[in-house]
Image (cartoon, rainbow, N blue to C red):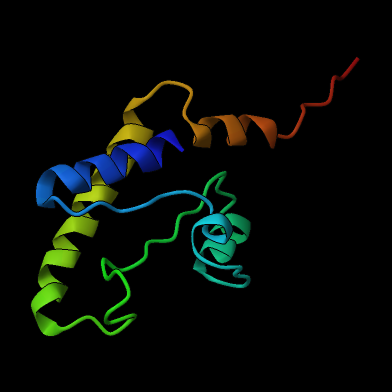
Length: 109
C-alpha cells in the first residue's frame, strides 16, 4: 500500500488529479482473471496493481481525445515513482516474497 500511496501522491503533485488506491474489489468492483491476477500468478509478484482511468463517471472507459495524453503522463509519473520506491527501499515487498519462495538447500553429510 505504501508503494501505491507514493505513486498516487506523485501523480497528484504532477497534475492535481487524485487517484484512489487499494484492492480493486474494495475500490471498484469484484474482478477476476484480469491483468493483476496474471501478474501475480505468472510473474510471482507479491503485489499487482490495476490503474483506472481518470474519469469520474462521465466517459467511463472511453476518455475523450483531449484527456488521453494527460492521463498517460499521470500514469507514467506514477509508474516511475512506484518502480523507484520498490528499487530503492530496503526490504521491499519483492525481496520479501523472493526470500519466502527460495528453495532450501539440502545438507550433505
